Length: 275
Image: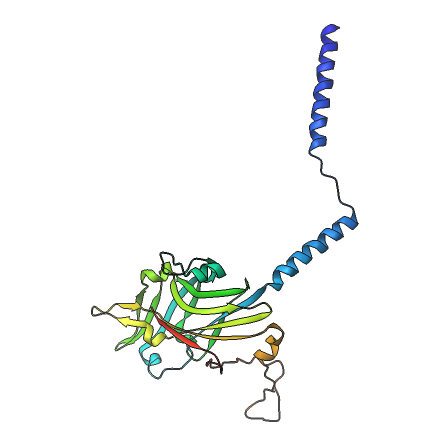
């Protein structure tokens, strides 16, 4: 009986200790009012953070059509893996300090990143533009962009005996980042638009042994406009599609391909970097 009593006592003490531990880890539940208040607080914090940010949009083009690029090359296919922007804090900018890669101290903000790369045919870009990325960034001054390329690229050349496919050598700078020195500022409530003008014709070098290398020549066309003017800035196109043989018969639900030529806007600056 003494053994049984002792066992019961030990069991009760163990249960009491375990219950006490369980009570210590319990978090009081919030009622609906508390949850709503917490959501309002979180929304307020997010709104306040967004008020101090602006939007960066990046496009890619080969703005001016060339007369002889199509005759020489049928395709120049590269793959972009990542785009970053370099943010400089005010005190660091005043100090003018620089790090090993030549850029002032600060933070690199990832604007876009693609698993497996974002494939682009530079020949297809001539006279056209494509959207790359849009990111909400902290307001302030930025010194440059950095473009990372995958190491695999090809070029298709119009040879004497037809199309010839070659590997396109990407220099190490493609993997370490092509630096495009172009200071710009992110302003709260504004959109900063950067169009990367990749000159395909000037970017290809043919070596003496017949190999092809990519030496990127990239310009930057910049423009800034207020957030609320985004739609009016982009503009719109209206019209009707009709049969050329029967001009009075309109085609319903027709698919229309819009192509445009990107040129610098009035009052903007264009910078070229020969990497």
